[in-house]
Image (cartoon, rainbow, N blue to C red):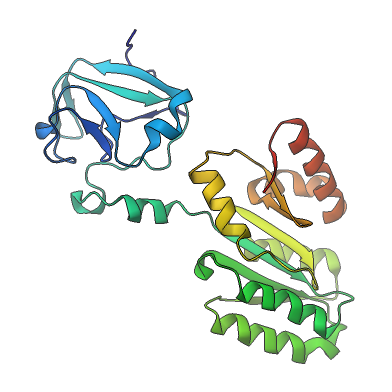
Length: 267
């Protein structure tokens, strides 16, 4: 049975989405050319989110200055991040562009405390080999003032990351807590982050595979883990990080909670 769409904020209506396919469709983005019944999605989200898809209808009218005939369409009982208004991209439908826009942003915080030069090289070399878009990864070196002997290694790694397409940053402070807070400020705006001691190797396809899990397999996770590397939701740290004395305490706590909630994924 079809129903009128509700007003829930976490729902997404396909009705005006540029990627919705209607019967007798001639040009998406121009509502007057649309048919009456939605039959598919150019972005494939009807299949990916089929468990959340609810049939709905409208009785016609005007919305955003566009006259809308009576239509039958789907409403997703969740947020669909591929939804695009008819005016998006000048009205030109481009699934590839929209898909690129929803790639998550990652941050990598490299803790160099008590590290050796070869540790810094190991981690930075692994970052150079990452297959994901480098401009969507923030790389932050966390450096204690006493680490003056490591300056050459950090400088070399900094330049290596720049050459690979990163925009690396350095946070330096004698106070560990202040340095940690500043590192996370530099990482702000990302979706997920990694914070590891220098010497850890970041798997080359890790971020690419997380993007696929999130946007193709529709996995929901607060924590992803591979080969000992934890990739944690940055919003989760923003909400819970201050409740713990150390980052290690936060990491242990969020992993336990994520597992109990079914939001922990080995990838």
